[in-house]
Length: 199
Image: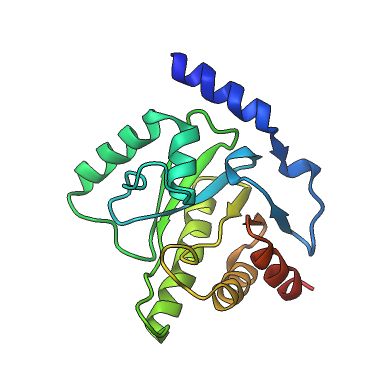
């Protein structure tokens, strides 16, 4: 397929980063700033919407769009089929697994984070923690040894970056078991927050 050849060439041009070449900041935990679609690891996490078939705003700069773009149209079709079978929108805080098609990782874990309207509630905090826990549990069930998390809910969903990062780190430390976890950040502000949280 022409699309596949093009996407694989684009990823090679951007450069692939292998988890094996990263240095942990604490046992089993890594902090890496860059494009999650170029990470070679067990699974990357997509901050999805409840429709689960990719971002609905063309050329939008969100992670959902990036992952679906560089995976190829097959990912959107697979997600559409999965959601058709499910018969309802994806609840917040759970996770689904799909192949990756043209991405260098082995799987994509899709999770829907809470959307913040005004103040962050205790329910929002619990739902965000559930996103991280659900992804880790799904990875363990599928024998995946490493997971790269994006900053779930902090972009278009307006969860405050510092509070979201603390929930992410606390939840991962509690539930990761023997798994290796990469906290993938794109913005400098998030790198600084995670750097401080991870000492």
